[in-house]
Length: 78
Image 1 (cartoon, one colour):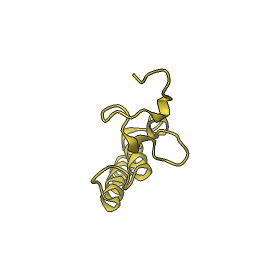
Image 2: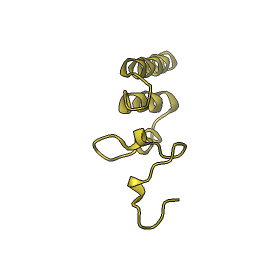
Image 3: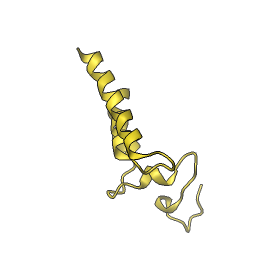
Image 4: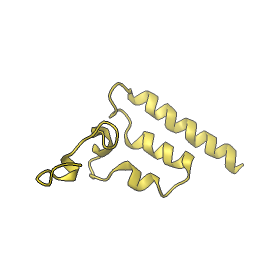
């Protein structure tokens, strides 16, 4: 846990709170949105939300992952 003098939003931990989790301009953490959706939709949102922000993960790869989860969800609802 961060010391009381540090705001939680300023604290980063590589396991529980990496920087790319809070990089969205809204300041909202992606999980606050994705936990309200099923697995496939939540993962698609996650990859779109954080595309290109995770170290070493190019934008195209994240976008392709989002597409994969959306296509998988389409198969489920057919």
